[in-house]
Image 1 (cartoon, rainbow, N blue to C red):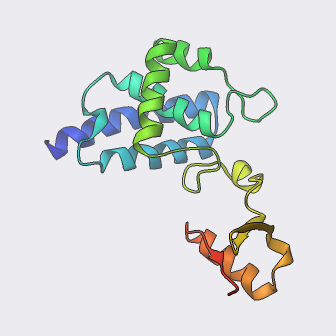
Image 2: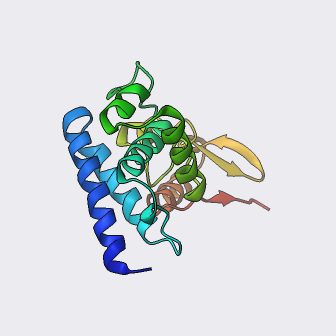
Length: 165
């Protein structure tokens, strides 16, 4: 694959996403979308090299929105799937399929360390739990030094568990 062609296509997608986020979302979503697009661009077989840039831009926003509850009216920011499709001129099924492809390729799910918004990371119900001897226990029941070890590991994008035997 031609690296220049990849960079050009990536820039077109990022420009579309930047404009969308500026009008409809916020800077945090653009930063996540930019990181996601960069990661897709480093794949051996760059997926966005084929297909319309608008579909990829919509799929990226949809994928991030899915894991960050963007489509839930009780969350801020909120936007509907129809708003995304209307903006980019895409169909629900095409955008949904592209979003699924992205989420499967990058193994994205809710409370993802790399692609969750700050609000989602802060509200992660699993952040206060840790595995000890195969049991899930509240983090605050461990001695302070172990709590610090867990926080440090998670800050580095890793996870940690303990065995007392």
